[in-house]
Image 1 (cartoon, rainbow, N blue to C red):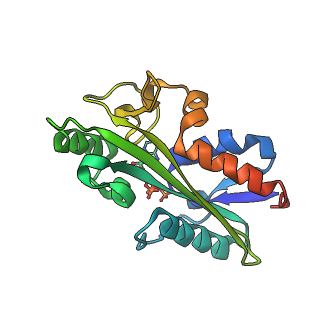
Image 2: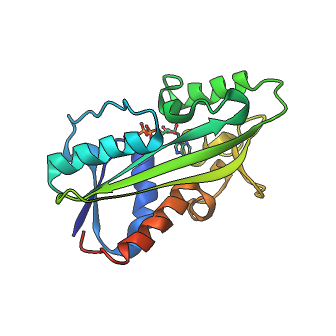
Length: 193
Ligand code: ITT
């Protein structure tokens, strides 16, 4: 039994390997299977973009494909960078520096991570969820683990940023962890991926 993770982001793939281990199925990284497949994220929402990615890899591989579209929404920036989180600046480090710059002197640092998951099956059926993790943007980078905005994000009620947490600690509260637990509930009835 195989499931394609419709992504080119190896950090996401590694998180899904941990999160989906209990399913006991073989996970394949989409970009490894089809290095030339480029999906333009033309959607305006996380769910639309996740659907574009899941459908593209499902059609190309004829295997069930799970896509994640995610990002950080900052209240003081009207929800930016949001769906454009990966394209906010050329590199992850520049994204973090830009976010700190935009929030310099801003008191309201509340933010949330969002993760949309869409799972497409070759028979045309589809499942999706959108989950959030509330928190705030720190004044400076804290922690070395993770990727993207992890070192700037303090989840509500926690004392460590995502980048200071182990992967298990992050999964317990993260947007992707929550979304994946919804996936498990859904797969209860449909496990023959
Ligand atoms: P794929 O589209 O190939 O999956 P991507 O990195 O381009 O890879 P997205 O378009 O969904 O993925 O962009 C998500 C961006 O949001 C990601 O690159 C990070 O900058 C940020 N992000 C999402 N989840 C995150 C997390 O758990 N920790 C830190 N940053 C995260």
